[in-house]
Image (tube, rainbow, N blue to C red; front, side, top):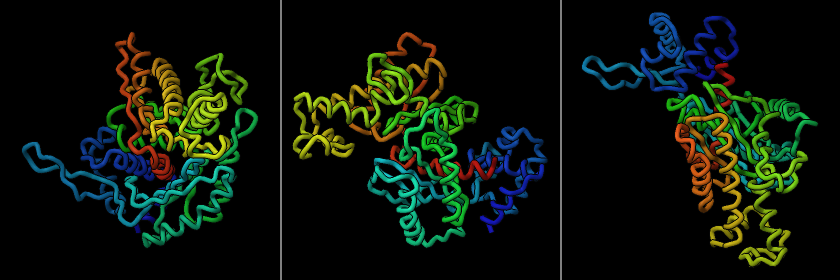
Length: 398
Protein backbone atom coordinates (compact mmCIF):
# COMPACT_ATOMS: atom_id res chain seq x y z
CA UNK A 1 0.00 0.00 0.00
CA UNK A 2 2.79 2.46 0.91
CA UNK A 3 4.68 1.90 -2.33
CA UNK A 4 1.47 2.22 -4.36
CA UNK A 5 0.62 5.53 -2.67
CA UNK A 6 4.17 6.84 -3.18
CA UNK A 7 4.02 6.07 -6.90
CA UNK A 8 0.56 7.64 -7.24
CA UNK A 9 1.86 10.79 -5.53
CA UNK A 10 4.90 10.73 -7.81
CA UNK A 11 2.82 10.59 -10.99
CA UNK A 12 0.19 13.17 -10.00
CA UNK A 13 0.64 16.72 -11.31
CA UNK A 14 -2.34 18.43 -9.63
CA UNK A 15 -1.87 21.53 -7.50
CA UNK A 16 -2.79 19.57 -4.39
CA UNK A 17 -0.31 16.81 -5.22
CA UNK A 18 2.46 19.37 -5.62
CA UNK A 19 1.72 20.71 -2.13
CA UNK A 20 1.70 17.18 -0.73
CA UNK A 21 5.05 16.44 -2.42
CA UNK A 22 6.54 19.65 -1.04
CA UNK A 23 5.40 18.81 2.49
CA UNK A 24 6.52 15.18 2.18
CA UNK A 25 9.96 16.36 1.06
CA UNK A 26 10.27 18.62 4.10
CA UNK A 27 9.32 15.74 6.40
CA UNK A 28 11.82 13.45 4.63
CA UNK A 29 14.64 15.96 4.94
CA UNK A 30 13.94 17.23 8.46
CA UNK A 31 11.99 14.52 10.28
CA UNK A 32 11.23 13.89 13.04
CA UNK A 33 9.70 17.37 12.95
CA UNK A 34 6.77 19.11 14.63
CA UNK A 35 3.85 20.85 12.93
CA UNK A 36 4.90 24.39 13.82
CA UNK A 37 8.31 23.94 12.23
CA UNK A 38 6.80 22.38 9.11
CA UNK A 39 4.32 25.26 8.81
CA UNK A 40 7.20 27.74 8.89
CA UNK A 41 9.40 25.84 6.43
CA UNK A 42 6.52 25.21 4.00
CA UNK A 43 5.31 28.81 4.30
CA UNK A 44 1.74 27.57 4.63
CA UNK A 45 -1.14 28.62 6.80
CA UNK A 46 -1.35 26.40 9.92
CA UNK A 47 -4.77 25.05 8.93
CA UNK A 48 -3.58 24.18 5.41
CA UNK A 49 -0.45 22.48 6.71
CA UNK A 50 -2.43 20.49 9.29
CA UNK A 51 -4.96 19.35 6.65
CA UNK A 52 -2.21 18.19 4.26
CA UNK A 53 -0.38 16.39 7.08
CA UNK A 54 -3.60 14.56 7.91
CA UNK A 55 -3.87 13.49 4.27
CA UNK A 56 -0.25 12.27 4.14
CA UNK A 57 -0.91 10.38 7.34
CA UNK A 58 -4.09 8.81 5.92
CA UNK A 59 -2.07 7.68 2.89
CA UNK A 60 0.44 6.11 5.32
CA UNK A 61 3.22 8.20 3.77
CA UNK A 62 4.16 9.70 7.14
CA UNK A 63 3.98 8.51 10.75
CA UNK A 64 3.17 10.26 14.02
CA UNK A 65 4.51 7.69 16.43
CA UNK A 66 7.10 9.98 18.05
CA UNK A 67 6.66 12.73 20.61
CA UNK A 68 8.95 15.74 21.07
CA UNK A 69 10.22 17.32 24.27
CA UNK A 70 7.58 19.13 26.29
CA UNK A 71 8.09 22.78 27.26
CA UNK A 72 5.52 22.52 30.05
CA UNK A 73 2.35 21.39 28.31
CA UNK A 74 1.42 18.44 26.14
CA UNK A 75 4.29 16.84 24.23
CA UNK A 76 4.20 17.88 20.53
CA UNK A 77 3.67 15.24 17.85
CA UNK A 78 6.70 14.65 15.61
CA UNK A 79 6.18 13.67 11.98
CA UNK A 80 8.50 11.37 10.06
CA UNK A 81 8.24 9.54 6.75
CA UNK A 82 7.01 5.98 6.83
CA UNK A 83 9.77 3.56 5.79
CA UNK A 84 7.93 0.32 6.51
CA UNK A 85 8.29 -2.24 3.72
CA UNK A 86 9.65 0.10 1.01
CA UNK A 87 13.30 0.14 -0.06
CA UNK A 88 15.84 2.00 -2.17
CA UNK A 89 18.87 0.60 -4.02
CA UNK A 90 22.02 2.57 -4.74
CA UNK A 91 24.89 1.37 -6.93
CA UNK A 92 28.33 2.86 -7.51
CA UNK A 93 30.33 1.45 -10.42
CA UNK A 94 34.00 2.13 -9.72
CA UNK A 95 37.48 1.12 -10.83
CA UNK A 96 38.38 0.64 -7.16
CA UNK A 97 35.42 -1.24 -5.65
CA UNK A 98 31.86 -1.28 -6.92
CA UNK A 99 29.16 -1.15 -4.26
CA UNK A 100 25.49 -2.11 -4.06
CA UNK A 101 23.61 -0.75 -1.04
CA UNK A 102 20.10 -1.66 0.13
CA UNK A 103 18.47 1.19 2.08
CA UNK A 104 15.23 2.27 3.67
CA UNK A 105 13.64 5.60 2.71
CA UNK A 106 15.69 7.41 5.38
CA UNK A 107 18.88 6.25 3.58
CA UNK A 108 19.80 3.92 6.44
CA UNK A 109 21.94 1.08 5.07
CA UNK A 110 20.34 -2.31 5.60
CA UNK A 111 22.79 -4.45 3.65
CA UNK A 112 25.54 -4.04 1.04
CA UNK A 113 27.74 -5.92 -1.39
CA UNK A 114 31.29 -4.95 -2.37
CA UNK A 115 32.58 -6.16 -5.73
CA UNK A 116 36.24 -6.40 -6.72
CA UNK A 117 37.29 -4.07 -9.54
CA UNK A 118 37.30 -4.96 -13.22
CA UNK A 119 38.51 -1.64 -14.63
CA UNK A 120 38.56 -2.67 -18.27
CA UNK A 121 34.85 -3.45 -18.50
CA UNK A 122 32.46 -0.92 -19.97
CA UNK A 123 29.58 0.43 -17.89
CA UNK A 124 27.23 -1.89 -19.80
CA UNK A 125 29.39 -5.00 -19.20
CA UNK A 126 29.89 -4.06 -15.56
CA UNK A 127 26.16 -3.56 -15.06
CA UNK A 128 25.40 -6.99 -16.55
CA UNK A 129 27.80 -8.56 -14.04
CA UNK A 130 26.20 -6.66 -11.17
CA UNK A 131 22.56 -7.57 -11.88
CA UNK A 132 22.81 -11.18 -10.62
CA UNK A 133 24.50 -9.87 -7.44
CA UNK A 134 21.68 -7.36 -7.02
CA UNK A 135 19.14 -10.18 -7.35
CA UNK A 136 21.08 -12.18 -4.74
CA UNK A 137 21.12 -9.22 -2.33
CA UNK A 138 17.34 -8.84 -2.58
CA UNK A 139 16.80 -12.60 -2.20
CA UNK A 140 19.03 -12.68 0.88
CA UNK A 141 16.87 -9.99 2.50
CA UNK A 142 13.58 -11.57 1.31
CA UNK A 143 12.71 -8.48 -0.75
CA UNK A 144 11.13 -8.43 -4.21
CA UNK A 145 11.31 -5.61 -6.75
CA UNK A 146 7.67 -4.91 -5.92
CA UNK A 147 8.93 -3.39 -2.65
CA UNK A 148 11.66 -1.25 -4.27
CA UNK A 149 10.77 2.38 -4.96
CA UNK A 150 13.71 2.80 -7.31
CA UNK A 151 17.37 2.30 -8.10
CA UNK A 152 20.07 4.95 -8.56
CA UNK A 153 23.38 4.16 -10.23
CA UNK A 154 26.60 6.16 -10.60
CA UNK A 155 28.75 5.28 -13.60
CA UNK A 156 31.20 8.08 -14.38
CA UNK A 157 34.13 6.20 -12.83
CA UNK A 158 33.93 3.61 -15.60
CA UNK A 159 32.99 5.64 -18.66
CA UNK A 160 35.72 7.05 -20.86
CA UNK A 161 37.02 10.53 -20.14
CA UNK A 162 34.74 12.81 -22.07
CA UNK A 163 35.13 16.57 -22.34
CA UNK A 164 33.44 19.08 -24.63
CA UNK A 165 33.49 16.83 -27.69
CA UNK A 166 31.12 14.21 -26.27
CA UNK A 167 28.03 14.17 -24.10
CA UNK A 168 27.90 12.12 -20.91
CA UNK A 169 24.21 13.05 -20.65
CA UNK A 170 23.61 10.96 -23.77
CA UNK A 171 25.57 7.99 -22.40
CA UNK A 172 23.76 8.24 -19.06
CA UNK A 173 20.42 8.34 -20.88
CA UNK A 174 21.23 5.28 -23.00
CA UNK A 175 22.26 3.23 -19.98
CA UNK A 176 19.18 4.41 -18.08
CA UNK A 177 16.94 3.23 -20.92
CA UNK A 178 18.72 -0.15 -21.04
CA UNK A 179 18.44 -0.70 -17.28
CA UNK A 180 14.75 0.18 -17.20
CA UNK A 181 14.18 -2.71 -19.61
CA UNK A 182 16.08 -5.12 -17.34
CA UNK A 183 15.02 -3.91 -13.88
CA UNK A 184 11.31 -3.74 -12.98
CA UNK A 185 11.47 -0.48 -11.02
CA UNK A 186 12.33 3.18 -11.54
CA UNK A 187 16.00 3.70 -12.51
CA UNK A 188 18.08 6.89 -12.54
CA UNK A 189 21.67 7.11 -13.78
CA UNK A 190 23.89 10.04 -12.86
CA UNK A 191 26.98 11.58 -11.39
CA UNK A 192 28.64 10.03 -8.35
CA UNK A 193 29.87 13.34 -7.00
CA UNK A 194 26.34 14.75 -7.10
CA UNK A 195 25.01 11.61 -5.44
CA UNK A 196 27.64 11.74 -2.70
CA UNK A 197 27.09 15.46 -2.09
CA UNK A 198 23.35 14.95 -1.80
CA UNK A 199 23.71 12.09 0.72
CA UNK A 200 26.24 13.91 2.92
CA UNK A 201 24.17 17.09 2.87
CA UNK A 202 20.85 15.31 3.49
CA UNK A 203 22.10 13.00 6.23
CA UNK A 204 24.39 15.26 8.22
CA UNK A 205 24.49 18.93 7.29
CA UNK A 206 21.21 20.24 5.89
CA UNK A 207 20.11 21.73 9.21
CA UNK A 208 23.51 23.35 9.76
CA UNK A 209 24.11 25.21 6.49
CA UNK A 210 22.77 26.27 3.11
CA UNK A 211 26.28 26.77 1.68
CA UNK A 212 27.88 23.36 1.25
CA UNK A 213 30.78 22.04 -0.83
CA UNK A 214 31.57 18.38 -1.42
CA UNK A 215 34.80 17.27 -3.08
CA UNK A 216 36.04 13.81 -3.98
CA UNK A 217 39.62 12.66 -4.57
CA UNK A 218 39.55 9.34 -6.35
CA UNK A 219 40.39 8.08 -9.85
CA UNK A 220 39.50 11.66 -10.80
CA UNK A 221 39.00 14.76 -8.66
CA UNK A 222 35.50 16.18 -8.59
CA UNK A 223 33.53 18.80 -6.72
CA UNK A 224 29.89 19.74 -6.20
CA UNK A 225 28.35 22.71 -4.36
CA UNK A 226 24.87 22.91 -2.86
CA UNK A 227 23.77 26.50 -2.30
CA UNK A 228 20.33 27.32 -0.96
CA UNK A 229 19.29 23.64 -1.08
CA UNK A 230 20.03 23.49 -4.83
CA UNK A 231 22.96 22.08 -6.80
CA UNK A 232 25.10 24.93 -8.07
CA UNK A 233 25.66 22.86 -11.23
CA UNK A 234 23.45 19.85 -11.80
CA UNK A 235 24.37 18.32 -15.14
CA UNK A 236 26.75 15.45 -15.83
CA UNK A 237 28.61 17.66 -18.30
CA UNK A 238 30.04 19.72 -15.42
CA UNK A 239 30.85 16.90 -13.02
CA UNK A 240 34.58 16.76 -13.86
CA UNK A 241 35.27 20.50 -14.10
CA UNK A 242 36.78 20.69 -10.60
CA UNK A 243 39.53 18.27 -11.62
CA UNK A 244 40.58 20.59 -14.43
CA UNK A 245 41.44 23.49 -12.14
CA UNK A 246 45.02 24.54 -12.99
CA UNK A 247 47.28 24.28 -9.94
CA UNK A 248 50.80 24.21 -11.46
CA UNK A 249 51.36 25.54 -15.00
CA UNK A 250 54.62 23.57 -15.11
CA UNK A 251 52.87 20.33 -14.15
CA UNK A 252 52.03 17.32 -16.33
CA UNK A 253 50.00 17.63 -19.52
CA UNK A 254 46.29 16.97 -18.95
CA UNK A 255 43.84 15.35 -21.39
CA UNK A 256 42.15 18.75 -21.71
CA UNK A 257 45.30 20.24 -23.24
CA UNK A 258 46.37 22.30 -20.23
CA UNK A 259 49.31 21.69 -17.92
CA UNK A 260 49.09 21.03 -14.19
CA UNK A 261 45.36 20.34 -13.80
CA UNK A 262 44.32 18.93 -10.46
CA UNK A 263 43.65 15.50 -11.98
CA UNK A 264 47.29 15.26 -13.08
CA UNK A 265 48.58 16.06 -9.59
CA UNK A 266 46.46 14.36 -6.94
CA UNK A 267 44.14 11.74 -8.42
CA UNK A 268 44.77 8.03 -7.86
CA UNK A 269 46.16 7.80 -11.38
CA UNK A 270 48.46 10.78 -10.73
CA UNK A 271 49.81 9.16 -7.56
CA UNK A 272 50.37 5.85 -9.35
CA UNK A 273 52.14 7.53 -12.28
CA UNK A 274 54.33 9.54 -9.90
CA UNK A 275 55.36 6.44 -7.95
CA UNK A 276 56.13 4.38 -11.06
CA UNK A 277 58.17 7.27 -12.47
CA UNK A 278 60.22 7.50 -9.24
CA UNK A 279 60.84 3.74 -9.16
CA UNK A 280 62.01 3.78 -12.78
CA UNK A 281 64.44 6.54 -11.83
CA UNK A 282 65.96 4.19 -9.25
CA UNK A 283 64.13 5.24 -6.07
CA UNK A 284 63.71 2.47 -3.49
CA UNK A 285 60.20 1.29 -2.58
CA UNK A 286 58.66 -1.65 -0.76
CA UNK A 287 56.42 -1.98 -3.81
CA UNK A 288 59.21 -3.86 -5.57
CA UNK A 289 58.72 -6.69 -3.07
CA UNK A 290 54.97 -6.80 -3.73
CA UNK A 291 55.06 -6.99 -7.54
CA UNK A 292 57.25 -8.67 -10.14
CA UNK A 293 57.40 -5.65 -12.48
CA UNK A 294 56.37 -2.03 -12.13
CA UNK A 295 53.63 -2.66 -14.71
CA UNK A 296 51.83 -4.65 -11.99
CA UNK A 297 51.61 -1.66 -9.65
CA UNK A 298 48.00 -0.66 -9.09
CA UNK A 299 45.94 1.26 -6.53
CA UNK A 300 45.69 -1.70 -4.17
CA UNK A 301 49.42 -2.49 -4.10
CA UNK A 302 50.08 1.20 -3.42
CA UNK A 303 47.58 1.18 -0.53
CA UNK A 304 49.30 -1.94 0.81
CA UNK A 305 52.69 -0.24 0.63
CA UNK A 306 51.29 2.82 2.43
CA UNK A 307 50.07 0.55 5.25
CA UNK A 308 53.63 -0.82 5.39
CA UNK A 309 54.81 2.83 5.76
CA UNK A 310 56.74 2.85 2.49
CA UNK A 311 58.47 6.28 2.35
CA UNK A 312 58.15 6.68 -1.43
CA UNK A 313 54.40 5.98 -1.47
CA UNK A 314 53.82 8.17 1.58
CA UNK A 315 55.70 11.08 -0.04
CA UNK A 316 53.57 10.74 -3.18
CA UNK A 317 50.41 10.64 -1.06
CA UNK A 318 51.42 13.73 0.93
CA UNK A 319 52.26 15.67 -2.24
CA UNK A 320 48.87 14.82 -3.70
CA UNK A 321 47.15 15.90 -0.48
CA UNK A 322 48.96 19.26 -0.63
CA UNK A 323 47.72 19.99 -4.16
CA UNK A 324 44.21 18.84 -3.27
CA UNK A 325 44.21 21.17 -0.25
CA UNK A 326 45.30 24.10 -2.41
CA UNK A 327 42.45 23.49 -4.85
CA UNK A 328 39.88 23.35 -2.05
CA UNK A 329 41.28 26.53 -0.49
CA UNK A 330 40.98 28.34 -3.83
CA UNK A 331 37.37 27.17 -4.14
CA UNK A 332 36.59 28.33 -0.59
CA UNK A 333 37.92 31.79 -1.46
CA UNK A 334 35.49 31.94 -4.39
CA UNK A 335 32.33 30.27 -3.00
CA UNK A 336 32.86 30.79 0.76
CA UNK A 337 30.88 27.71 1.84
CA UNK A 338 30.17 27.16 5.53
CA UNK A 339 31.11 23.49 5.35
CA UNK A 340 33.41 21.50 3.07
CA UNK A 341 33.35 17.70 2.99
CA UNK A 342 36.26 15.72 1.54
CA UNK A 343 35.32 12.29 0.23
CA UNK A 344 36.77 9.59 -1.96
CA UNK A 345 39.10 6.63 -1.63
CA UNK A 346 42.14 8.64 -0.57
CA UNK A 347 40.64 10.49 2.41
CA UNK A 348 41.09 7.67 4.98
CA UNK A 349 44.61 6.80 3.79
CA UNK A 350 47.37 7.48 6.32
CA UNK A 351 47.62 11.29 6.92
CA UNK A 352 46.03 12.37 3.63
CA UNK A 353 43.11 14.27 5.16
CA UNK A 354 45.26 15.86 7.88
CA UNK A 355 47.61 17.23 5.21
CA UNK A 356 44.67 18.52 3.17
CA UNK A 357 43.23 20.34 6.18
CA UNK A 358 46.57 21.85 7.21
CA UNK A 359 47.15 23.09 3.65
CA UNK A 360 43.72 24.75 3.59
CA UNK A 361 44.28 26.39 6.97
CA UNK A 362 47.69 27.72 5.91
CA UNK A 363 46.28 29.15 2.66
CA UNK A 364 43.36 30.84 4.43
CA UNK A 365 45.30 32.06 7.47
CA UNK A 366 45.16 35.71 6.35
CA UNK A 367 41.39 35.61 5.71
CA UNK A 368 40.12 35.57 9.29
CA UNK A 369 36.57 36.45 8.20
CA UNK A 370 36.22 33.08 6.43
CA UNK A 371 35.03 30.51 8.98
CA UNK A 372 34.65 27.48 6.69
CA UNK A 373 34.75 24.13 8.49
CA UNK A 374 36.39 21.15 6.73
CA UNK A 375 35.49 17.53 7.51
CA UNK A 376 36.14 14.07 6.04
CA UNK A 377 33.17 12.31 4.48
CA UNK A 378 31.13 10.38 7.02
CA UNK A 379 31.08 7.17 4.97
CA UNK A 380 33.95 7.28 2.53
CA UNK A 381 33.05 4.03 0.77
CA UNK A 382 29.23 3.88 0.68
CA UNK A 383 28.20 7.51 0.42
CA UNK A 384 27.91 7.51 -3.39
CA UNK A 385 25.56 4.52 -3.28
CA UNK A 386 23.50 6.16 -0.53
CA UNK A 387 23.27 9.31 -2.63
CA UNK A 388 22.12 7.27 -5.61
CA UNK A 389 19.21 6.13 -3.48
CA UNK A 390 18.58 9.70 -2.32
CA UNK A 391 18.32 10.79 -5.96
CA UNK A 392 15.40 8.39 -6.38
CA UNK A 393 13.60 10.25 -3.60
CA UNK A 394 14.46 13.55 -5.28
CA UNK A 395 12.72 12.27 -8.39
CA UNK A 396 9.67 11.37 -6.30
CA UNK A 397 9.17 14.82 -4.80
CA UNK A 398 10.36 17.05 -7.67
